Image 1 (cartoon, rainbow, N blue to C red):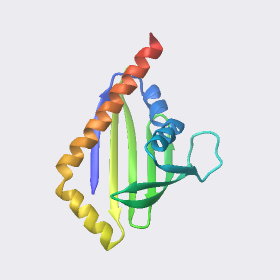
Image 2: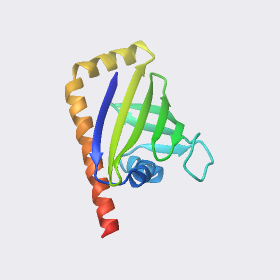
Image 3: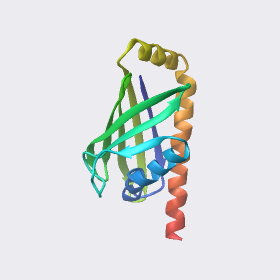
Image 4: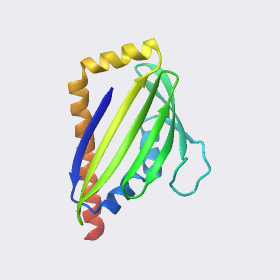
Length: 156
């Protein structure tokens, strides 16, 4: 199952890349939402090979996932691979400069079930794909707007 969306952001590509690669901020957000996060690498700078172990509750069960940054091409692209006992996945973040101050953010998330139970979960998600895709697009649009506001406040 694949979710994909794109947003045009009135911000230079380098600033958008800095925002989407602010891994410390994403870790803090996940912790505030109740997830447990641990880094599995010892890198001090963002780059290829960064890895996280994340545990959270979803549909009443504890879920665990390992995420690895497998492609890192600043300021153009990042690719993450995820593995869990039931679902593997990939997230692709592409940035394209439309002009010096305008960037297109394209985000794609693919889920690949590896067990029968996960196939049933993904099948139920496919039935609700319209609603899930709408929520996904709204979240990315909100993120784009927040990135624009952050950039404007820094430039003011």
